[in-house]
Structure formats: C-alpha cells, structure tokens
Image 1 (cartoon, helix red, strand yellow):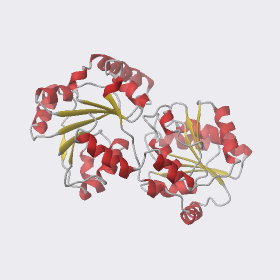
Image 2: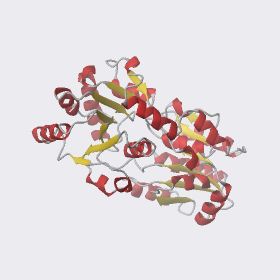
Image 3: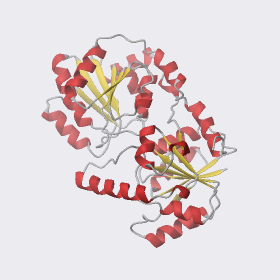
Image 4: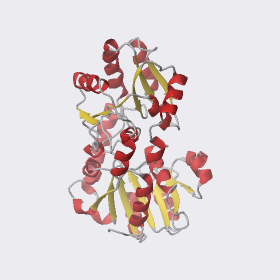
Length: 369
C-alpha cells in the first residue's frame, strides 16, 4: 500500500510520530511518502534509513492557489492508496477537495493538537478566527476517515458536523523499552551534568508558546527558595530560547537551571530527573508525559493536558496556578517511588509502539472502518 503523508513545514512531533510507527511496520506491505514544503526532510536520518520520497509543495494554497492545486494534482496522480493529512488547526481544505475530485479512495484527517502555537496574540487571534471559519465550512464527505490522538483533539478540529462515532482515537505511542528506568544510566548522566545531591525537576519540549516554559521558571524560582539543593533541567530548543534565558538571568537562577538544547537521547535525560513537569497551555495528548511515566517519573501536568495520559496515580493534573503547582511539587518531592513500575503501566495503557504500529497497519487496510 502506498500512503502519502502531508507533513508539517518544520520537523517536530508529527514527523516523529510517523517515523516511529513506520520503524515497526511491515515495510514490504506499506510504503510511506511525504508531501511537504520542507526540503529538510531529505536531510534526516530517517530519509537515509527508510525508502520514502519527499514531494515538495512550492507554496501554500493561500499564496498561489493555481500553482498549489496543480502540484497537488501532479503528486496524487502518481497513485496513492491512502492520503494521510496530519492537521493541528484548519487553514483550508483544498487538498481534501482535490483528493475527492481525483477519486483517492482513502483520505484520513488526523487531529494532533488542541490549539494554535503562535506566541503573537494578534496573529494567534487571526489564525483562530480562520480555523473556526474553515471548521464550520468543512464538509464531512471530504474525507473517509477521521482520527484524533485524544477526545480534546477531536473536539478542537472536527466540531459538531463530524459525528463522534466517525472519529477513531489513535494513540500516540512510544518505544516503551527505550524509556525503562536504569539506575546506572541515571548515575552516569547525573554525574555528567553535575546533578549529584540535587532534587531535579525537568521537562522536555520545544521552547514555544504552547509549552509555557516561562511558567516553569517562575515555579522553580519559588521551589528553589525552599529547596536550595535543586535543579531545573529543560531539554529542548526553539524560538523562545533567548527570552527564557533572559528570564533565568533575571531570576538569578543561571547556576540552577540547565538548558542543554535539543537532544535525540531524551530517554537518557529523563533518567536524571526526579519529577517531570508539563505546564502546557494546550496539548493534543502530551506524549512526553507518557515517556516520562515510562521512566517511572511522577508527573505534574497542566489541566490543559488531556486526561488520556492520567493512567497512573503518579500523574497529577493541576490548573496553571503557581501555588497549586508548588503544593503538588512539594508533596510529590517528599515521596519515594518505584521507578521500575512505570514501564509496565505505560505498556498496559496501550502506548507501546509495537502494539500501535500493528493497529495502524490494520487501520490503513480498513479494519474497523
């Protein structure tokens, strides 16, 4: 089966989702290609490892309607069994219209988010207005399948005109074994980072409006006064790195906050932490909380993170309020945890990538539709 994915303009969670599942799928039966504006896909390790093609789009439908439409028709004419559209928010549905005109047999619209990751308030308001406008105009017959990573993600993208019995919940899964707790790895990374003797709060994610790292730094400033032998470890990079660095300096926390940048070995850094925090303003699911739980970490996540991740008693949802989070962090910091238990809890909740890759194969083949 030939599956064409509409990828994002950058490299992020959607691409990680696609590649991680493809790794465990039967590549003799399923072939992935990408339609994207991002030529950097050809520079990835996955491009060298997997036999996929990158079909570049010259522009957007808004900037060059005719050129965009012609290029999409040219790509779809190569003959794909499934068109898989990964969508965070609506800007239009020209690709769906063209796919219907050309008779593509399976068109999947897959919701991965619950809001718009744009730090500029004016731009965000305009994008939100457009999103709601397009959502109201979208016709259910423009796609054959509707998938979402959580019920909140389904509500955000599909609205009332797509009956909920047509929406399939498809779990974002992880390689559970990779995140399993290893005491020797914890010792090594804590020595490397100079964390011995400290209680380490941590998070992983792009430094963006969505992930709300500024809240985390304000929270840690309060916690650090109570627990001076504490550190904050923020793994990731992004457009707000400079602003966050300035905030750390303003709070006189430069000796207590570690910013190692973007890492491909996130599982190693999770080993170093004692408590995981995810203060997101919104999340489609919050897969990094699943990764943290697999490593046995207790987690405090914002009330905007879907309840789907609360599959153990060690994942606490709290409103984005500093006193509420400080109280939760202090209480969790006073407890002891068996970090080996996280691995089985995540697997039992159905987030094992090996299981979900087979589910995805079945969905592409039409099982349960």
